[in-house]
Image (tube, rainbow, N blue to C red):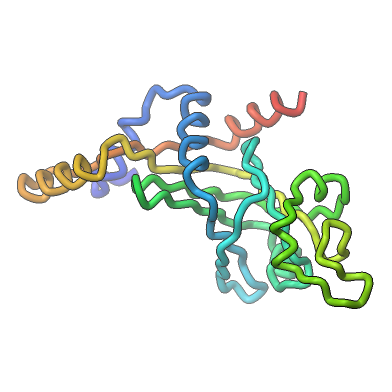
Length: 198
C-alpha cells in the first residue's frame, strides 16, 4: 500500500491482531443496524447498475435475496456473476462492502425459507391464476451472493468523537481515522462457511 494514503494505513493498523471471529462479530453488529443495501451488477457492455434491496438473510457470511427473475438484474448476473453489495449505517458512519459472485436459485424449499409475506408487495398478483405474487410464483427466485472478500469500516468513536478527531487532524496536519478498516479474506470466509455447513 502506498504511503501516500495514511488514512487507510492508520485505519488498517488499528484492526491488526483481530481474530476472524472478532471481525465477523463487528460485521454482524453493522448488519443488525442496516436493513437495506445497494446491490450492484455489471451489464454485458460494462456499465454498473445498482439498486436498493433488502437481504432476506445475512445469517451466514453469504447474503441471500428474493427477487423478480423477470428483471434485467438476472440477465446481468447470468452474463457476469461478479457483484458488490454495500451497506451503510448513517448513524455511526460504519459501512460494509462485499465483493463476490451471485448465484441464482429456483429451489422452492430454499425460497420458502427466505420468504416473507411483505415480499409479495414487490410482485403483485397479475390476475392470471399463475402469477399470484407468492412464494410459488415462477417469477420468484433467490439470489445468493458468495463473498470473495468483505471490507468494512467499523466506527470506534461517537459522531462527536469523530468530528473532534477530524477537526484536530485538519488543524495539526495529522490523519484522522476514527475507526478501523477491517477485511475478512476469502480464506476466512471459506473457513467459516465450511464450519457452518459441517
